[in-house]
Image (cartoon, rainbow, N blue to C red):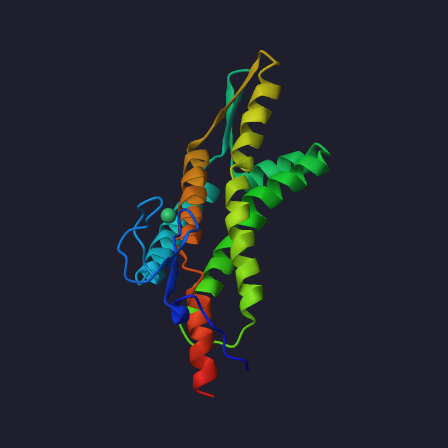
Length: 207
Ligand SMILES: [Zn+2]
């Protein structure tokens, strides 16, 4: 395998907040004065810490009610999965699919991808670094859109409240879900994508 030349090999470091290429040895970025660090040595720990609290928050998000509907003095709680089943019962298949993808498929996929990236960059690997970078970018991109589910709840709330007899309120699970989204976003951001190249070098050196 051809040896990859990294910025560090040429004595340079890139500022992670403004993108300026500076020479190694400076403590602060000359343009935006952010801390310059060729590698974030604690990134692995930070990724796993955020990943874990994200996962912990995701469990109650699925077990507790996402929606609380009150109609004719009857109160009904429904979880995410319960809501999807209700929507299917009402033949609202498109909305059911949107809710299912936004609140189950995407979050679970994110947990898997972040764990995969963290495990791979923690040891020597031969995986195509470009593929790993694309995966990382996808996770960061999705993170910004993950609040969609909370908006779906808000929109459903607004729609149903036109019917004066029914009130819908977001349940405790909505808070847990939002926290889970924030924590996984922080996990993805803590990831130092430059380490993908370091471990690739190692595997090239050792065989
Ligand atoms: Zn800078």
